[in-house]
Image 1 (cartoon, rainbow, N blue to C red):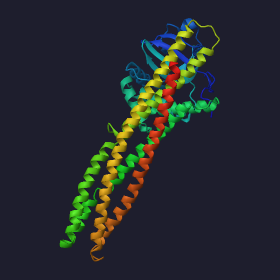
Image 2 (cartoon, rainbow, N blue to C red; image 1 turned 180 degrees about the horizontal axis):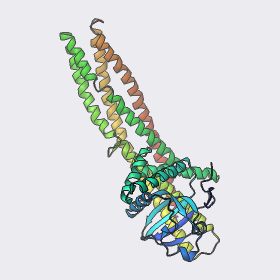
Image 3 (cartoon, rainbow, N blue to C red; image 1 turned 90 degrees about the horizontal axis):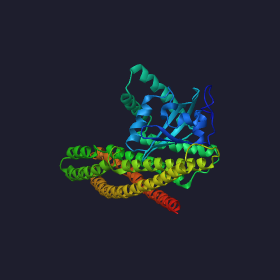
Image 4 (cartoon, rainbow, N blue to C red; image 1 turned 90 degrees about the vertical axis):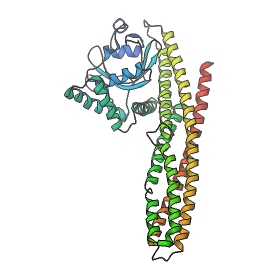
Length: 415
């Protein structure tokens, strides 16, 4: 992969290096590490007390800073790809993890190298041109950027952040020969399982949508049989009634709902973001402690901030994991209800086949076609529900392992 900093006019730095800076609530720089000062190419007196926008690059869409500022002012952890400018006008890209703290904001930054970063650079360039052409306000530009992110397949900015921090840290670990932590490996697995869960739940809904007209077709076939079709008509009514109950249950699985797999996805995304943030903060703390250069900053105090914040992120990640496990328990109950309803539908299907078998083949042709389509539907449905049972069990196991790992980390931190 080509080095994103290797172009003319850009500053190169090692992928293993970690930037750190802290500002007050107005964005005024109060502390930073040697890497930040060296790459930005300012002297300490020029940095400390200056607004952080001193390193802002004109190539950056204003949408990114509006999203970043709105989120951190609301107390939300935020990650973003940012192109910065040095004192001499050169450029450098970072992947920034910005965390609100009691008296301001703390930013830890690493070098982005993933394929997603390359895509983001294209998005930024196109969006910057759009800002100019359409004279977009910061608010309008931010709304347009969020729409672009959704167009890339992410439910919201948090989901984009989870994908970004996951892929950047994985790429970075591989590049510097660092073994991925067990915690973050489990978080990545949970994220993949959550994505599969969403697809399976949506597939389940589509399967049922495909047979929504079956009770109507059964009723039509029964009416065409006259008196011989009365038992079939009763069966059709029962099938329709049970289908209505199934669709009520399926409504709780909708991707845009407040519960079901959407709630699990939100909790898993938050855990991924918090876990990634904790990892970056820990690396920044270790790197800061290892620096030898004398700086006009209380290094011990700043390391203490980084360490304490990493511990808090782990605690919050643990809370999110508890949310995942709670929602999984609710979802498992929903799947159990669906399995019982489907069992009732299956009995109705069998009764329909029995009644159809009593009719002359020539009269039962339409009915046979409906029954055969139901046979195919029920076979596929049973397979999907069995897979969902296995998937929720696997996710519970991952969540349990993550919770145990997070609790161990918290205990080690307390000790």
